[in-house]
Length: 480
Image (cartoon, rainbow, N blue to C red; front, side, top):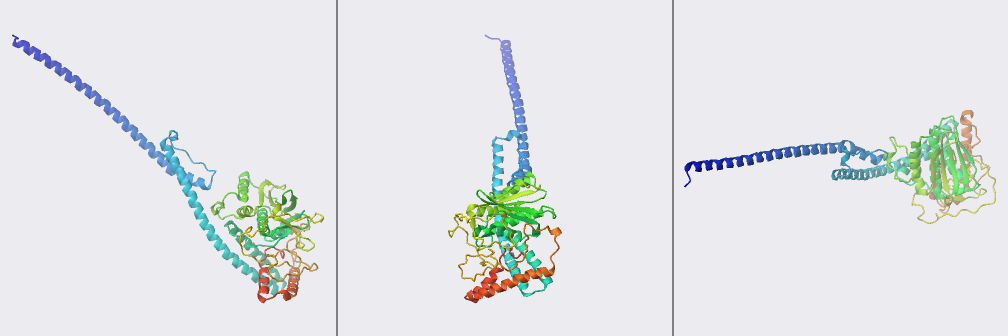
């Protein structure tokens, strides 16, 4: 039989062991809770850091990267900043942010093109109205020139007509940049007449010296006459604007292997490499032209050249310097845009510089594929017959039943565009009113005589009226 003290001692020992075991378990549990709290705190700190980094990355995206990406659409040379944390590149977050920028750029480009197209459509309509008003003013001025013989009034009307011609050129260039038709469809004309016609549309045309080294009779096909005149006018305008007023602009017309080149050399300041590269991109016409890319106010000359070079398969290069330190611009007219006119039957304008080449056997006219009806887009045509001196100012093919004027070689022609050998404007005395009146009187007398001879050929009064009206729309500059 176990005694009571032994039982008590055993119970106390068992209780002690149980208490020790329970205390150890409680201690381990407390340590585990402490570790868990430390891990939770570390995770919470890491989550807070990630959240702050993500917030900073989004703020950097909105403040720096999105504006730069939007500007890069219009200015490709600008760089878009990268992520704020370089380690973000290649991660799901970095890829998502790059996709945001790409989607933004695509949408900005789309909206920019749509808005610019709407602006161009609006400008086309506005320039159409302006051109119509300027044509009406041109008709009124030329009627006044024919009505009054006062020398001073004749000189004033001549100056107003020339100013109006320059306004017409600017409106025409704006319309071409906005995708409109060039506005005139001419018959085949001597290439030198197209060059001097473009020269006559400018202020300061006296500074332009044209050297004609072409074969006699070198001409342009009908649909290339007005584009070449516009391009030459814009190249000359740039040369005149960016060179000193006491310097000349030299134009050379040369035959090359694939056609003809018109070279314009000025003695201006020239262009930097970036300016030259940008100008070459514009005249090449490879990229779409947006009005917002042309500055404020927009400079449309090179953009119009780019439209025409792409539309009529011409070539313009402005990437080289001239021998005089300025810019050399070269217009290349390929053989398929060239034709030939008989100089004896249709001589160039009297004001056009004579060629330095001796006339040889008539070369066959180059073949060209412009005879199909869809080769030239439909456009309003102004029919003007050849004038008394054989100038190819007219528009039309001669098959519309309008009276044709006879060529007169004895009538003196008004010399508005000086020949290449004329002295500089600074050394030449100003034209007196009497001289201007004499030139204008010669023009009026020849016009009246030609009309009187052509009157029996006009079947109806409508045809004669159309003949007189369309003649006033000629922009070739033969009377300049």
